[in-house]
Length: 273
Image (cartoon, rainbow, N blue to C red):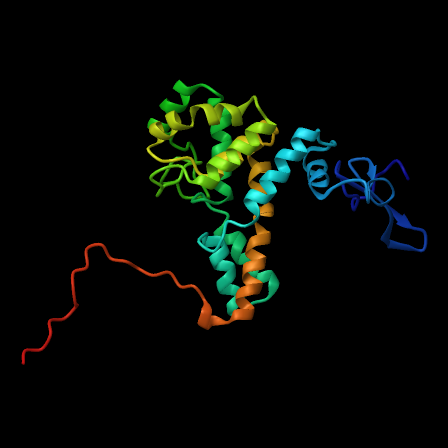
């Protein structure tokens, strides 16, 4: 290589390639964070370990692998009630392409209402509040106003908490308990210990986004990394439900039903006999 670097050189600490001798457009060897992917890693590393290596630049400890395995299952399928999965199902039943289905799921599941942005905001809260209950209570009572224009609208509920729940959902408590078994100290353990106090301060029960954010915080993921992983890990369920709905057809599409608690009655009075 000459001393003067080509302007077309790709700068990346994540990925390096060596080209085939007879085809410069095909790699003969690929290195991820210095590891030979097809020579050293293939067959010896799990998908979760590879994700961690890509994001963090090193091989994960066993506890980190176990936590990410649980998070992958927890986030993989929010279920048909989730707006992002429902959006994918609508795209699937309408005959949209596979890419359109996943883009629909990502678009709806990206926001601050149970989506990946909420995980981002909850991770920022962990960074700012730590494990100080008084600080959490103060921030939950008086959220800090943004100092600049935001791409996202301001959340209408505390990030990491369920805006509609009356009490903490059973899957949320189960996921938290499993994660604490692996990480008995840190954000997850403190969250399990102070959950009820935090829920009282927030006025809402803990949500799965709050559990995911605490887990990412314990693994030292940044808010941006946690947001990106949340988007990535929640796609399998959307894909599977979209494929199923595409086979079943629109006649079996689960439309939501409105149940008016205070029905005003018919729009027009009945004609007099």
